Length: 420
Image (cartoon, rainbow, N blue to C red; front, side):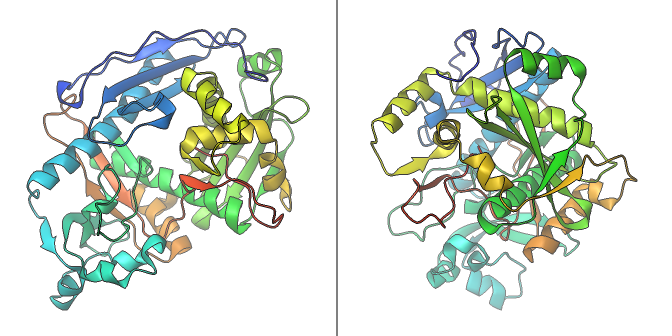
């Protein structure tokens, strides 16, 4: 592919279904000029879900990670897959029979009975559908991360699933944003909320003109990574997207020296002095942008690129198509940099409550005006024992849409976003 790094082929992933409970992570070094970079990828077949465009239309769930430590990459790729597998299996089990603490009912009747529950109309996608409040649906037990206690959450906001059945309200599809897998509830919830915070800041910066800061001066990347990028003909541009309570999102754009062939990676910062630090976030964002770059040289990406070049279709669907459009169009960095301020890289600072799951949730709630709730989506018997999977649900959070029109004639309209 023009503008892409030369890559080495990965070993084909194993064909293992959701019920198997084990999924090997295939680890490889895809970039000839970045020999320290390792990519890990694991897949599980999921016949009940929609085709995965990033996997050539196969019905699979995928976990992937990149970095320079094989053990860390393997663990993170497997955790990414476990998040998705548990959320899918938990959804199947809930459909077959509600889990303990669940309720089948209508929001309006729950509210009349004094049961705390998230209002379906708090989701922007349902703003024009008042019938959602009177639709019979499954409600799952959750816990407010802002201190409001137990709250019921609609199952359609929690589990991975396909589109609503005919005649149902257009329930939003939660996708994979806001899932966390770890060995404990708090760590899993923190990961899940950080992801929602990251995507909310990205969406508001792209569509709402929220503050953006171009970071100037030497970046904190380790010298071997910086040298590898230079050898591969890649430059970096970093932006900071500030959030509430000293939270932020660090965004990296990888491009050639002329600003072409752009791919993006991002990492939320809970606090200037808490993990991840700005240096750790910068590394993670670069790794993600490289992972996206590698995915653009896959057979699935080449097929999508042919379709986009042929002008077939007027909408982009899914992260792969968005990333390919940004890679070819060159507009994304200009759109983000327009009107941005500039500042030096943030230095170390004292940790605060914004580093915890509850602190991060309060920061997100401050920004959105809505509660943030965690729901346990662990599916017992799936994968390694001791794994805890959490879905963070934040009705007020803005997320980059999975599908949107290609650029229209109106120059004031935001172009399609470049984020996965």
